Image (tube, rainbow over all chains, first blue to last red; front, side):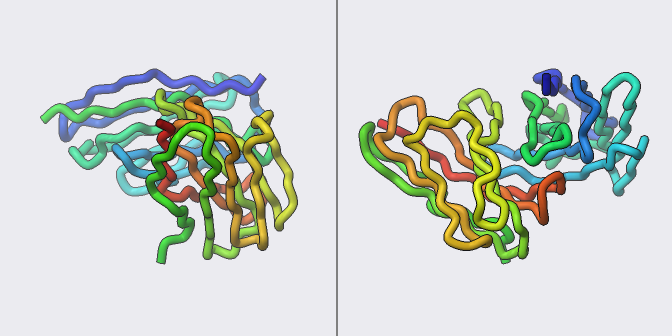
Amino acid sequence: GEDVEQSLFLSVREGDSSVINCTYTDSSSTYLYWYKQEPGAGLQLLTYIFSNMDMKQDQRLTVLLNKKDKHLSLRIADTQTGDSAIYFCAENFGNEKLTFGTGTRLTIIP
Amino acid sequence: DTAVSQTPKYLVTQMGNDKSIKCEQNLGHDTMYWYKQDSKKFLKIMFSYNNKELIINETVPNRFSPKSPDKAHLNLHINSLELGDSAVYFCASSPGSNQPQHFGDGTRLSIL
């Protein structure tokens, strides 16, 4: 079936790197996504990776895709207080709808 | 300038009422969606429309009726609201299916 899993919480010291992990069950996704949701706000498309890529870098964000292990990660370099949010990975599993992970709540420790 | 806009942002109403949420996108996208986010932040697809035609109806009660007057708009009407309908409802759009989706800011629905 289509299942996407994330750990629920992550705490990181300001200035350190944050790594948010995601595992999925089905390999048929065309794109794999990371969304950010700040408190009381909507979903912001942070970045996405095409399924035939292994890595994508966009300023402080690095996405790594390990298709063999069905593992997706998001690394945020030099984590800032403004990075506090819930981060969702999402896959489309080859169809129109997005299936979301449970979300990882990132807390920044001053 | 908002790409995907939803109204209202907040909706507080009593059980049994009927309410509508509106969504508009100015991105020129062909596909629009409704998602529901529950109190535990879990997000699930409800409906998807492509160029005004229903593509996905994800076992949503028939009290929920989406309507797409044109490809830039997808509205959601809910009849006989129940306590369990309390959630945040997100509209999204994408250029086509299997392409990155852009979300609105959500409508926070509270049923008293």
